[in-house]
Length: 88
Image (cartoon, rainbow, N blue to C red):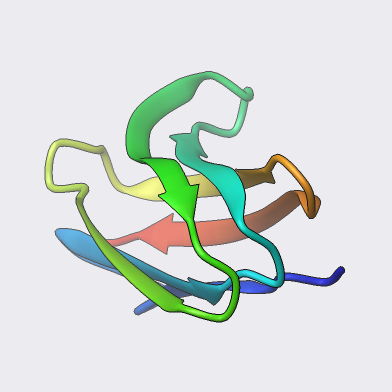
């Protein structure tokens, strides 16, 4: 399986969205980490159904500007990582 996740807009100011469609019925977690790998925000945690598009909004207004990473962990599809940039 190759479930892809998209974080947008990127760069973002206060809110960022994560959109994906899972290829499995599975458990998904999305977290935002700083450049040192420390988790700074839990975005989503829960079960999703195969083939249903998911779109989750995250309030990231408390984060300082700079580079972050999102970690997208799926129980069956594995993990994905991506860079996101917070601006003023």
